[in-house]
Image (cartoon, rainbow, N blue to C red; front, top):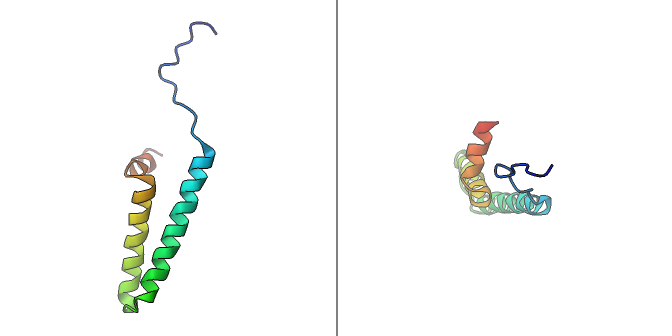
Length: 73
């Protein structure tokens, strides 16, 4: 074991931080849905606004690197 090269090793990710990010993304998305519903917009537009809000929240919480990570899978 002595002399093992660990220069390519990545540090362990915190599961608590990941779960807090997940909860934040859900809370902000649900809040965006309720806010959009309170605006009394036409139903044809609400779906697009909610979708755009969800994408915006995901980019805000996870960053643009999340899109790259999804493409690698």
